[in-house]
Amino acid sequence: MLGSKRFHTYILLNALSSLKIGLLSSTPGIAVCNIPSAAVEETADSTLCHVLNLYRRNTWLYQALREGTRVQSVEQIREVASGAARIRGETLGLIGFGRTAQAVAVRAKAFGFNVIFYDPYLQDGIERSLGVQRVYTLQDLLYQSDCVSLHCNLNEHNHHLINDFTIKQMRQGAFLVNTARGGLVDEKALTQALKEGRIRGAALDVHESEPFRKQLKIFKDQQGPVVIELQKLGP
Image 1 (cartoon, helix red, strand yellow):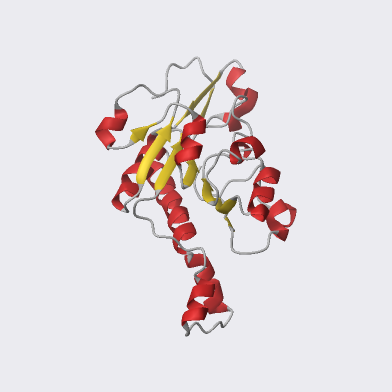
Image 2 (cartoon, helix red, strand yellow):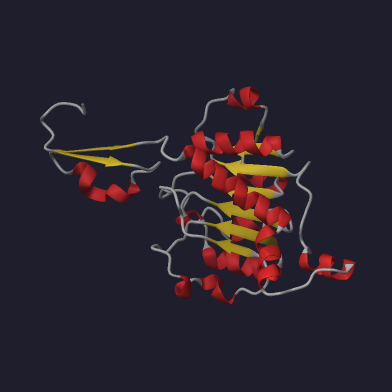
């Protein structure tokens, strides 16, 4: 039972954020609540799939196979797999460390990642229980990470958190994964960084303009195996 009968309407949001509700939450007689644990495991699984795909280039190997590319010689293998990297010993940086990011951290450690996170709203101590490292500035996380994954809600303070300035603080050739909110990333700045090679690859299943329409995406003219774009399956 949800509260008392003084509410004539209940809105239950199956998502981590209540942004989609808008002004309804301030309307008299309407109770709004969300499920912060919704799809945590599924989102964590998808996030790690994106990370592994960027490192091991499975998408592009599959595309080469579908296009009929015969990979036989050492030179052909080198060309198709160019950009693939070994995971063990790499540093995965998580921006935001709520339920989903913690689930990602557990999975990533099993693959040999060193996991660090930045979350100014979280109390100290959880890093010790999960065997990860906490950093206390966004700049430190960007500087130390070989792959950056976003796991924070979108608000007026972090819109375009990943922009031209913060991208320049990232390691040369780092990866970027966003399964959180599209507005966290300045897509124009990301496109430019991909073209210049400052970011080696990006995987996105959220976009600043949604619902997703491929023909409108600024990545449509991006050449080379650097961008994975998917429609979000979770909330």
